[in-house]
Amino acid sequence: MDVVRTSKRLSYVLRHRPDSVGLELDGAGWVAVEQLLAALRLTRAQLDRVVAADDKQRYAFDESGTRIRASQGHSVVVDLGHVARRPPDVLFHGAVGRFLPAILAEGLRPGRRHAVHLSPDVPTARAVGARRGRPVVLRVDAGGMADDGARFTLSPNGVWLVDSVPPAFLAVVEGGAGR
Image 1 (tube, rainbow, N blue to C red):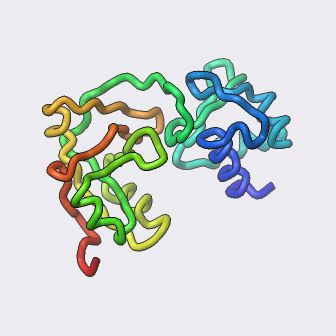
Image 2 (cartoon, one colour; image 1 turned 60 degrees about the vertical axis):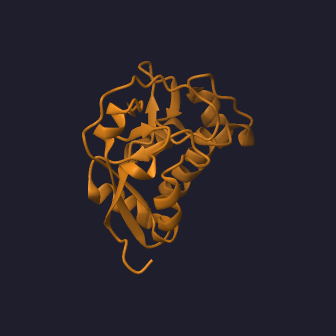
């Protein structure tokens, strides 16, 4: 079994297209492990290997270990039950450099996701931005946004989530030259 390929497929199913394999997520994004195993033709040991190997903790089992869901990043409607929290004063966002002019003009929007994903540190943001091209790292004045009423939540894997980030709360940290 190719762990990376299986993880990508698992992410696709749990975040975006459970229907592609005949599954339906509940309102909180959970699906029965046994149903998932049958749909993806995996063993429990293989699933456990994929989940354990995922350094970003994209997946979570419920307390009983009988249900699984993606931690965040859904394009399907789910309520993950994340509680609003005061964020650190500064968070970071990694993006592909070619999108920088639009980001600085319009701010950060969730795109096909339900929230903008923010990182607590520059290296994580840089890695996220580098997945699809030359990265740019943006500093987000999360404290200022929270003071202005923005609602932040923290996913179990340490990713901060917010509906959007207006341009006034953004500054380029690295990668902005030569755009």
